[in-house]
Image (cartoon, rainbow, N blue to C red):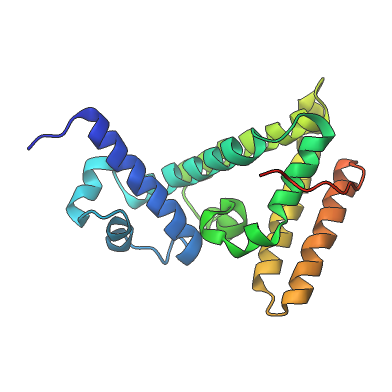
Length: 200
C-alpha cells in the first residue's frame, strides 16, 4: 500500500518530535536509531526513508525543538517588558525544570551540540537566534539587533541556571537558585522585578 505525501510528512514529524524528547532525556549519544524509531512507533527500516543519517535527524530535531519553543513561549508572550518577564519566569520555573523532555534543548543538550557536526551547529544557531530575536524585540523594539548580544547573554545565563537547578539534589536550594536566576536575568535585561506570573 502506497501512502500519500501528507502521511509521509506526518510520519517524519512524528520521528522528529519523538527524537527531540528522547535526545533531551538520554542525550544525543545515548539515543540510538532503534530507540528513536521505537519511540515513534516505527521499525528501523523506515528511518532512511525520512533521513540520510542520525546527524540529519539530530539537526532537524534540534531546529524543530527551538521552533516549538519560540512558537509556544516567546511568540505567545506579551510585547515589551511584560513579555520579557513572562519569558524569564516561564524559563526559570520549577515546571520547566522538572519537565526536561518538553523543555529547552539548550539546557538539555548544549554540551553535546558543541561536539556535533557543523550542520547541527548551524541548525542550532539559526534556531536559537530566532528565540533570541524574540527576546531582543521586546527589549528594544526599535532596534532589536543592538541588544541581540545582551539577550543572548541572558539566555545563556538562564540555560546554565536551569541545568544547575536540575542537577541539585537539594530541592529547596534548587528552587532558590531558580528565583535567584529570575532576579539575575531581570538585572541583565534591565527589567523591573515585577510580581506578575506568566499566563502560559
